Amino acid sequence: MKPQRILFIDRDGTLVEEPHDEQVDSFDKLKFTKGVFKNLGFIRSNLDFRFVMVSNQDGLGTESFPKETFWPVHNFILQTLAGEGITFDDILIDRHFPEDNHPCRKPGTGMLTEYINNPQYDIPGSYVIGDRDTDRQLADNLGCKALILGQDNMSWDKVSEILFAGERTAEIRRTTKETDIYISLNIDGTGKSDISTGIGFFDHMLEQISRHGMMDLTVNTNGDLHVDEHHTIEDTALALGECILKALGNKRGIERYGYCLPMDDSLCQVALDFGGRPWLVWEAEFRRERIGEMPTEMFYHFFKSLSDAARMNLNIKAEGVNEHHKIEGIFKALARALRMAVKRDIYHFELPSTKGLL
Image (cartoon, rainbow, N blue to C red; front, side, top):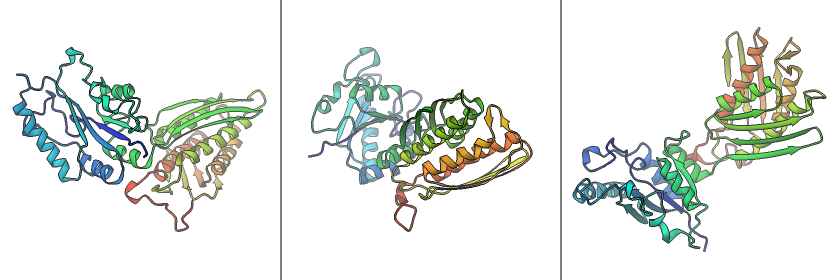
């Protein structure tokens, strides 16, 4: 039998909003978190995770937190969730104060010994869902992954998307006699980037893809710049396109298409299609030989290589006076087009094609 994956789910701040005094001890303090019913119900109905609630309730049963104020609200929470098809296979509540340093209190794993080193359960494939750093620490202590609401744009919508359709990340290492390139990409990131190609203006353009596409992007390129910039720019584009294609996976549920962007005096249009057929239409003229350290003749080569490697149709048009504005507008429009096209809908998780193949 296949080992079962587990969702270790926090209560306060995750299932219900946590009040300022950190005790949900009356019904007037009770408010469910946004999206919890729709998304946790979807997960329960469509996936095979074991649901385990893991909650710290400081001093439960003491004068500071009498049982009589806890259980009526707690039972109502469980009944309400059950009414939406959300039930728990196990409920674990620790009653110690932080200063007790008890091993059962999160992030300690004392309450979870049944699941540790047990071949019935797939701990590396499991997740802790919570709202605090202690929930992330619990995941580290268990050896599983963490989804922390409120951090890195994590929401219940994003939790259900990741659990149902998977994380869209990829790494590419491309090494030739002319370049050595490492790229990592998280399509569903927050716009963080770490770019180093040896060409300052090129770095700045790649940062636009990350920032405006809301993708986490690392690019480390060591190229033969002592010869010229051609190999560095073209090979980076090939590696980036390959990384995008790899991260997209089976493309189920994506919008597929994506955009037009003004930038001061310039109007830049980038339309794209992840239809599996690479093609580039390029209608942009540059009169300057270079912008920064980047030859303008390499703009076309970058987008042609990117289109080929990512197997996407790119249609790029730009007009305007300022050369810097035009190319920066093109990169920003590309980023916004990517952001639109890779958007994923798990409730319509089909290939966006009548052919059944992309």
